[in-house]
Image (tube, rainbow, N blue to C red):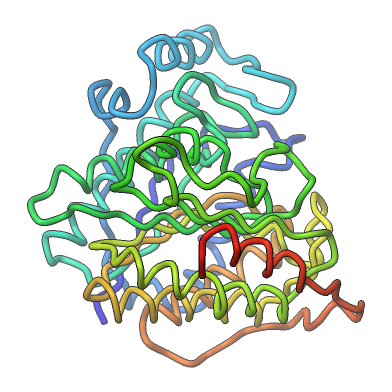
Length: 341
């Protein structure tokens, strides 16, 4: 397999050291990837800044200008959680453009699959505002860009961050060309993502929310993919898959209360890659979202690259949580009924 990766040092210049979403996330990740030797086996996809026109496929001009202006003033906050520093606008444009470059490399045959190691993250950014650590919605911008390519008519977005990607859902919930799936802790920030939210208008049925109670781990997540995601992906039959990859559902993450292990995350990744292989010629791109335990993040990303390369290696020095998982039979039943699975 020819597996690509996207990275640029400017991603480190969006930074507030006291904030959980800080530059250390990628600094430690890149150091670990270099030490492992895996970067030498990957194809580097050079990012470039997204243009205002490309951002505006998803975001209002007022929002784009707000991010630019706050950053130009030296930084500030969009809300209580979402900061900007002097270089945040430039970093956010490069992150969005990095996903666009990855889409072009994938659909142009330069890579078979890939992972964009981006900051700032994106899935909470709506069409009109940034929130939840996110400035521009990198995956949504990439999906809109993919749809400009000849032959790409359906994009499947899977979001396994522990928080619901309210921004991605809001952007696409009326668009039948884009299927949005999210599994997330519920009720939890941002408070959206109930199983009854299934899309609007022409997009009705194109949103699959699987809201999980705290305390669900490897077994529960495996059931979600086996019993819900696979049949819906086969029904939709995408031309390309984009993944919002958040690793904050791990039992060691400081910001959430789920029980996934690194092995469980690798199982999720294998399901998604197998779906792409079956449904869309293996065309799949991952984009980094959350994950705030550095040990978890570095090992999870390494494991993801092993899966993308077609390898069986799993690194899990942290093991299982040791806690008993919450059952999810009722959630599975509600979602199955909502989508006639």
